[in-house]
Amino acid sequence: MILKPDSTLVHTLHPSPNIEDRREGCRPNMIVLHYTGMSSADKAIGWLANPESKVSCHYVIDEEGRITQMVEEARRAWHAGASYWAGETDINSVSVGIEIQNPGHEHGYPDFPPAQMEAVAGLCRDIARRHRVAPERVLAHSDVAPGRKIDPGEKFRWSWLARHDVGHWVPPAKLDERSATILDDDAAAMEEALNLMRAYGYGIENSERADWTKVLIRTLQLHFRPARSDGRLDIGTLDTLHRLVDALPSRATS
Image (cartoon, rainbow, N blue to C red; front, top):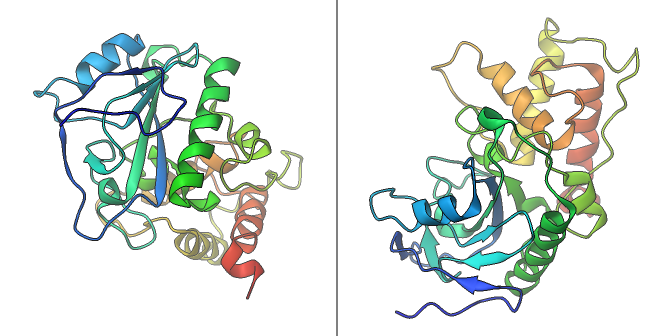
């Protein structure tokens, strides 16, 4: 099958063989944002097009904002891996995966350039409009795979995206003396936080990791309170989480 661009924003096409049909009855209702974790977009595209890699994505966006489409949106790309969100375990069948060129935490983790962010915003708006993706279903790879993935990480500009009509966001609590008060030893506060994360969509069940609660809190912070992404539950993180859940459309209309 010949790959044709789904978006008018696409600059170039580079088909990946690592695709399959979406699960029967599934269509894209989620956008998952990743970073490539590689030294260049060309290397990332080469890897995502390599049959031996067993990975792929729908789009790659380089530092200059050039968009390469690799898989048509109607097909299932292999970008999310073992993942979960709001009861869904086959994230690949219900999502569009976007890889954003950045070498990642292991290789210096530079800022995401303005031109790149502009391209991310434009492509996300276009996909969300065509597939009616709700703002709260524009997610990080880390959100759907906590403990396994941390991308696109704390430097990714979610607040900027929200100001440009992409994603669900509330202003995070400031890091002042009161909000920085640690609640790690407050069992009731921790249970409250985990229940709120479950209500938002996170998969919180995991019996294999002794540090699982810290992993979950850090995952939330990477996206929604990046000024504190150490996995420690403080008053500000809990406050931010409360407001985030309260701002969900389902809550606002109930």
